[in-house]
Amino acid sequence: MTNDQAPMTTAPATLDALKNSCAELATSEFRGQTRVVIAKGQLLAAMRLLKNDRGFDLLVDVTCVDYLNYRFDDERCPASGRFGLAYLLASTETNERLTVRVFVDEPDLEVPSMVPLWGGANWMEREVYDMFGVRFRGHPDLRRILMPDEFTSFPLRKDYPLQGRGERHNFHRIERAEA
Amino acid sequence: MAVAQPRHGLPDNVVVTKLDELANWCRKNSLWPLPFATACCGIEFMATGASKYDIARFGAEAMRFSPRQADLLIVAGRVVMKMLPVLQRIWQQMHEPKWCISMGACASTGGVFDNYAVVQGIDRFIPVDIYIPGCPPRPEQVIQSVIDLQDKIQREGTIGGEEFEVATRQQTKRALQELPLYGRKAFVPPPAPPSI
Image 1 (cartoon, helix red, strand yellow):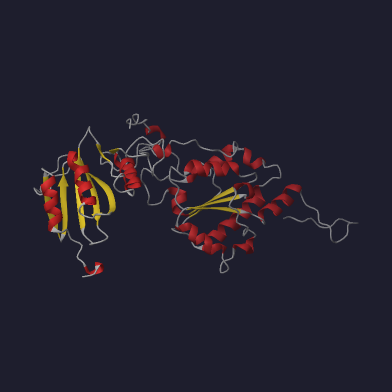
Image 2: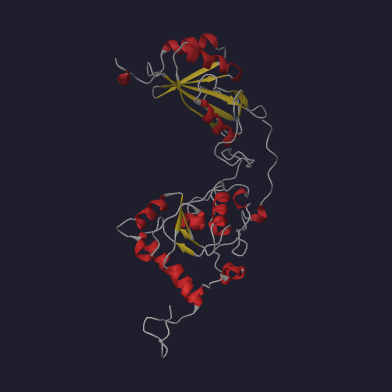
C-alpha cells in the first residue's frame, strides 16, 4: 500500500504506546479520526514519544479554543480548563494522523513549547499566544505575530467584545492643515 | 480653464488666464496616483489602469509607489488598525498639493468588517476628497471619481494651496463621525499586559 492510499487514521500501536507512558489519557474517535486528551504535565513527554518513537515528523497545526461558558456533555472529552489547545500531528512516512488536546485553565495559562521538537511550531504558538494569551514555556521568541505590539488584549477570547474596546479608534486624526 | 478673448495686439497663439487656473489645469491633468491597495479593490484598480479601461485617458496613469513622487492617494481596500499608522505616515510623506480617494465600501466605512481590527472608514484619520461606493467599485466608477476630482481641483484649487489650510472646509466633507456605541468616548484603557 502506497502512501497516498493509506488511510489517515491512527495505528493501534501508537495509542498503546501512549497509554503505557501517560497515566491520564482519554481517547475518542470521530469519523475515523482519533483524538487524545493529555494532561498538561505529561504533554512534553507524550509529544517526544510520538515524534521520536512513533514517527510523527510533521506538526500540521497548533490552535486553541476558548470554552468559556461552554456546556461539556461529552464524557470522552474530559475538559479540565477554559482553553483547549489542539495539536494536529501527521507522519509523512505512514500517513498516520493524531489530534492531541490539552486543556489549561486560568490563572496558569502555560504549557511547554513544541519548538524544540518541531521548528514549525514557532509561529503557530505565537499566534495562539497573540489570540488567546496562552504562554508557551521555552518558546524562543514569544511575541505577538498578528496584532500590533502595543495591543494589550487577546481578541479571540470569548469575553473580548467583537468590536473591540476602542483600540481601532485610538489614533491621532490628521487634518489637512497639519499634514 | 477659462480662456479670455485675445486682446487687441496680441498674437493668436497667446491666451490670457489666471495663474491659479493655469496651475489647476496643469495639476488636474497629471495626477500621479499612489495605489494603496490592500484588498480586492486593488484588483479592480489594476483593471482601471490596464488597457481596457485605461486611466491614462484622464492623465492619471503614472502610478508611483513612493509617496514622495505621488500626489493622489487611492486607498483601495480595508485598512486594519496595524496598518493605519503606515497609511498616516504615507499621507504625511506626500508633497502638497495632494488629494485622497477612498475607494470602495471598506476604505470608506469598514464595509462588512465591523470587528476589533478594521478601521471603520479612513476619513476618521486622514482627509478624504472623494468616496467611491461599491464592493468593489467598477472601473467606470474609479474613472468617474478621477473626473470629479479633476473638476474639484479646477474649481477649488489655488497655486498656493490655500484651500488646504482651512480645516473647517474639510470637516463638512467627513462622513460618519464618532459612533456612540464604541467611539472614542467609550474607550477605556485596557489593563497592562501580563508579564511573559
